[in-house]
Length: 62
Image: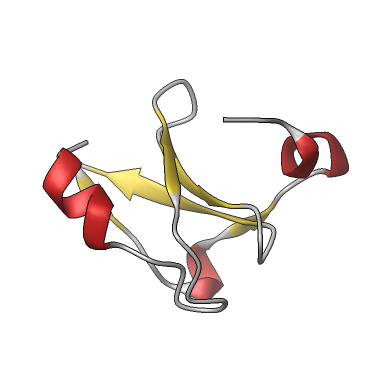
């Protein structure tokens, strides 16, 4: 994931910063509890495409 792009992306629901997780290829927002997929190196920042984080995922540190 491009560092400059990651620096400007925020969650469309909470407006909080997101973190990239390479192992799941997702952008995670702990504030809203959502994970947005990255498809073909393009973040899909739509709430309807996001999955809800589990309790454990939400509590994990970076």
